Length: 292
Length: 292
Image (cartoon, rainbow over all chains, first blue to last red; front, side, top):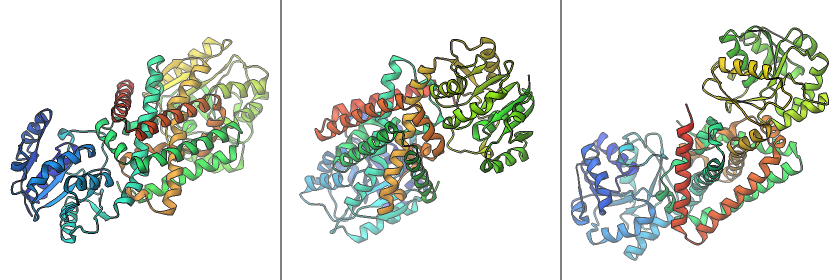
């Protein structure tokens, strides 16, 4: 059990971590840090809802006596956050994050500290949600979901174990992998799909402005476009942070589209059928591995 | 009330039309046509389930005394179906279809008849479903969904009115538009999204074969990829039938992706934010018009 959990970033993910930790009795108290005035209403709401016990606008006070610190802000702000944390770093506390890209978070820590402290354990809960804000947070958001930890060579294995236990107790299935593998896999399964959804809905939105088309869209489009309702700030950060992996995937995707275009142009019905059949079977394979 | 509804193609759509017509008491009897041996088990199942009263492997018998005939086969087979229907055509009966592309269906009828008879009313129920087969059919599939009728200049308005009433009675909201407008709109809201989903899941499926990635995909991917579980035969037909509209959309989509790629390459965070924000707002506009 932790004495004090400090959550930095009390949105959907930070709020849900706090709720889950409280529900499972994993810490004595939960505090939050709020550096910017525009975040105060959200923090006040978090306190009113009982998600956190209290919050501080001073990082030193927020971190004092905290033995578990989780940074759950958009990945683009991590560098600044770690600069603020640095003067108050405690070698006995466990520091982690919930960022969707791991290479960029490790780089942010390295930039702030000159190295990556061995008590910082990079982590990423695979729990998607197009909603945002503490009012959307829920104690069971991570139940039956995966949590990926990407330890570095020097990361203290005791802290990795401690963090794994924390996440297991809030219902997650913990996997360990390298930073690079994480960023490659997530670019394919999450970042590229979000870009495709944003791009499609943007394209159709402009058409809809000229001549209404959305009213003739069906349930399939509703599901397909759901992730285009995700938070733009968060996704701007993720896309830039992992662009090294994402850009080649966009290029591969465009090449695949050109292939389909060619099959259509040449009326290659059989190849089109084979392409769609392979995809349908692949999705079945995905469904077979997905617990919901 | 119709005396005899004849459904040609007793899959998800044809089966659901039969169930809905029966549930609303819109016809005295419901028969089906089954031309190919491989379809017999499905027709036997449809009869066992009470979806249809009986089926015929002879088109003349299936159509005898039918005053409402709905063709709900994949659009690629329509030409053959209308060739089979032609010798048994009755000027007093109402003929319609449920094809997802309207230009190609009208062309198929024209090819079979030399012209489009004035008692053929092209129609398309906007009720997506990635399942297929009569066992997936349901009486309320079309409830609160749109039904688009694309009458031609010579189409008999009385038959248009009769068909509109039929669909309204099974719960649909009926819209009239031109064949061309239908095919333009549906290419954007349905055909392109299906191609994107098939393409993405195919690309990821091949990556998954080399190194498992699907196990790290989240709920967002599940929703996004749902339409990739659609019937490959049906979608091969739709894509080829409407390729004139689809190919330019694929090209536009590739151009949009190249734009995003450029923003990533140049670290244009603000433009990325604006692009994502526009898409998120457009999806909200879609949700506001979508009843579910």
